[in-house]
Length: 300
Image 1 (spheres, rainbow, N blue to C red):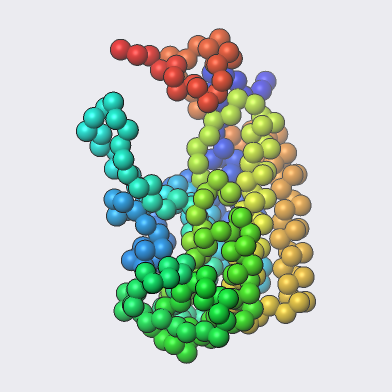
Image 2: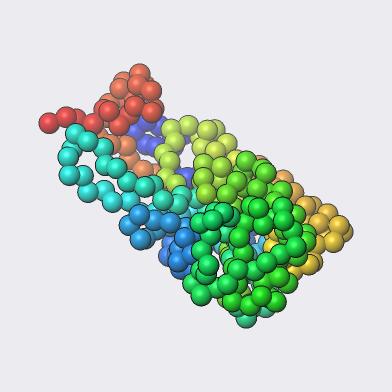
């Protein structure tokens, strides 16, 4: 008997956890913020009107060449207090997107950040870090770099790294990407989570739709990891053409496994049951557009 029904919707969290375990990765629907978040917040690269953020999902595992990854789906916490119930609250939404952590084999001796260029509004210092001047005028027109160590900052921003970051900036999926090097990791702050989401809660009434949704999610995650892996490697000057080809093959093989992994998971019933709200009748659910289901709440 099909477990999917209007009165018995299924959420994707259990299926996600199973799929990432197939690849030797871990998935958590909620998590604590990663260590590098503090620096990116202090630098204004991840802003929040309330001063805090929420982590809606976390994936961690090992990618090509044994590099450890962590992906956090995060959003700025909002002030939900409403003084006038008839007037929508006015607030700045703050950051909403992904924070990708790629671990180096060795630790950095200093901190380096790559922020969006704000022209005359660029600060003189950021968290006691000074500007790093580079030879690429094209790069400096888009980004402003700050570091504790001028030598290490320039060493990380290789010509290949700058070319890749500028290319990413021209691609819609990576628009407004910002980078931080701190501790032993590169952190990539990528806004607009609708491009790659993996931690949000969604209930499904149809098995095929649920399977297609999670397949698309996981494929996007591995595509993103392949790009972040290449960017990270270019910062270490370790991205020869042969290595690039091997990396692309590695992630392509991962993506090729997803179809069978999802099919097996669905056959094994790797989904947890979540009961539908009692105040919703089946007839109402069938006749009302899903985007309007919230209007079916009883009014008192």
